[in-house]
Length: 155
Image (cartoon, rainbow, N blue to C red; front, side):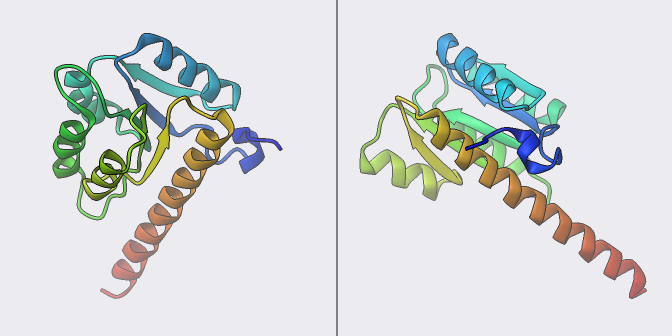
């Protein structure tokens, strides 16, 4: 199977990606996997306290987020990100965590995660879920654009 962004006809490989994980090794792995798959705009941080400013500066298309981190866990990060989203915007969050128990998984999905993958990561699964979320975002953006065009024409 070809999991590269190029397989998507070059429409997603310029997606702005933010990876948030307190473990440097995980950040490096995810960045390498995404870049090998053809994604060229991958930003990372190991400090969850910087996420809000990074979201404002980068305007990411997707966030890969660890749940268990010092200073601020992934649940708190999601709570802080969601209110700053623009009305009608869809910013997918793919949670990556070592805690595969039912409680954190359901809580993450209830509190704003769009999908969930348990560590140790299966790279193929991560790329498939990641690509699906990006495609959903792209479709959402197309629908928003169509609504704007129809609103202008209707005036």
